[in-house]
Amino acid sequence: TSDPDYDVVVVGAGVTGLTVANRLRAAGRSVIVLEARDRVGGRLLTDTLDGVRLEVGGQWVSPDQTSLLALLAELGLETYSRYREGESVYIGLDGVRCTFAGEKFPVSERTANEMDRLTVILDKLAAEMDPLEPWNHPDADRLDRVSFAAWLAEETDDAEARDNIGLYIGPAMLTKPAHSFSALSAVLMAASAGGFSHLVDADFILDRRVVGGLQRVPLALASRLPAGTVRLGEAVTKVEWDADGATVFTGQGGYRGRNVVMAVPPTLVSRVQYVPALPPVQAQMRQHISFGLVIKLHITYATPFWRELGLSGTAFSPYALVHEAYDNTNEDVEGETRGTLVGFVSDVKADGLLALDAASRRERVLESLAAYYGPEALSPVHYYESPWMADEWTVGAFGTSFDIGSLTRYGRHLRSDVGPLAFASSDIAGLGFQHVDGAIRMGEAVAARLLS
Ligand code: FAD
Image (cartoon, rainbow, N blue to C red; front, top):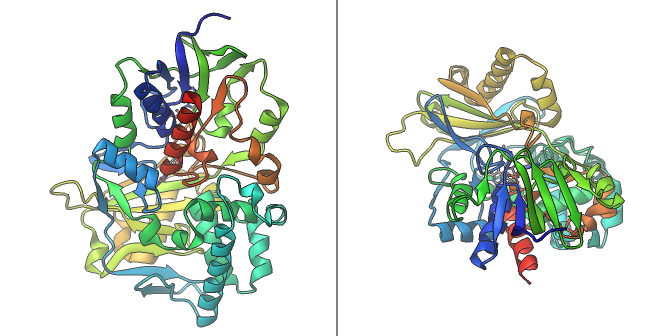
């Protein structure tokens, strides 16, 4: 062992790692941040492609995300509202397209009643859960043994109600099929957002955007650190650790710290070699966590033509390839006359889409949008698919979650330190789980622990 070069070596310059580094620096600790990519921000990337500024990764801020809202205020970043005037579109089980105003889907009275009843049950289950400790929910063992799809089938025989309620947590949030994660994981997703009702309400969960893009948060955090603190293009491949500290190796050399924070998704923790190896429970646990899969689509038109048709741009259908879409026009860009839609293709539908060539993918997506907005949707001026699933420093989207039975079996080890090593990311958050808000909460929690 040798004297540490730094109090703390942080691996990963996403919002989690940069929050840790900022809080430690502010308390006078010496810190270095090692980032594999040639940029900061991780799953946040605001990029201009073909002249259109796009939120390639995360973008929305909701009122429950109080840590993110506080950080935006601290950094002096402003937000604006998503365009939402006009009617939404829904395509039901019968394949019929309907427009509607307000939150309630235009479904049969029976289906609407069943959706309301399931919402009440899920809200109650979420209210009983501390999202930091879902395994302590009074019914945790039972809920973690059953898939969310099977739980929904036990609760209602109304297929359209099941498909809609399943959509909010399956394709739309965990981005996995509802048969592949537990009812307990579903309740965690709801509890982490302050309740299931919040996930159902697009005006709540997709409330605001950041002027200039959400990547301004990690960019601002990085710029507050002393020059040279964040080292880009340094993928960590090995961590040698002992009771006194750890040495972190990249292609450029070794960095010794009294502590190391692995601020990377739980799946990528295992990509690094540890000497000595991590305890068995750590290695086992990480084989039961996986990224979901969703393709975020950005389709720009000469004008936001749907507005002329009296549509808000908001569209949903558990039965369509693009299961949800919204008006994502950059309201903060002066003189912007084009209109952008954002849409999502998730889990098994994404598998199918990714099996096609680029031209066929585009054709299928535009046909799906035309079913919502009419034939004008077939002629965009720009089309882009966010490539997170093919990016080796993420390998999926939006975040990671446990397989059935593993939240109760392993969850309590997610935030345990191993000697001088700590682990943090939005994927192991309670409130703000899988969101930027959770990244900040986890970063602040680790920094506070290291300072105590
Ligand atoms: P990451 O951002 O993944 O950062 C981890 C960093 O570690 C990365 O920079 C990575 O390159 C680096 N790294 C990994 N391995 C190594 C290594 N071995 N050596 C060095 N560096 C390494 N959240 C919201 O709040 N609102 C949204 O609207 C929203 N939408 C989303 C849409 C998409 C398409 C995606 C992908 C995510 C979305 N999210 C959203 C989720 C949000 O982006 C993440 O929860 C959050 O950004 C994660 O931050 P993090 O720092 O924990 O992890």
